[in-house]
Length: 247
Image (cartoon, rainbow, N blue to C red):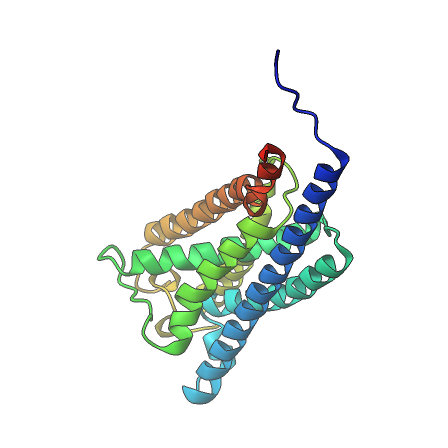
């Protein structure tokens, strides 16, 4: 005769309590991660401004600075949301908010990808990984932001074809604004932060290939991040069901 697998009310209560405690722990950890990202971004920007004496407007030529400021602001907001979620023991699910986080994670992923490519002989750009701002903006913030997103945020379902486009928001805005400024001569080519924005000394084909490549990577990364978020956001609870197997 097959052994009964009926679960007692006591076991269900213990299961619910373990789930509740793990959920609260998950949200508190992510709140700390979000505040850590905000602190890293804020101090990196301030370090660049007041230690390196760089003008903030001048630094905004770089997508890294756009991404860092955007990610720091979004992380601060979501850190507060995580604290509220832990206190009320409920998930705040909102599609526009989700896509803000997705855009932040996708932007940081592209920054990280551009940095990695920049370390190869394929492109003339050489990313900074040795200074405090460079290390934070190019490595620490991108990695931490991606982990925070895929392991914490509540999924919103399978990605629709247009959904990953929303993850390219900052990339598209940055590319449009910078292309207009350098393409119209409002900013001289010698100030171009990346070779594909040098409208005077690079071919149109090179610029188009680079722009298309970055946008394609942004779309692909956004799609991948959404899929990973669906699969990994519940990793915090992978062992909860062991309670039912005891005895």
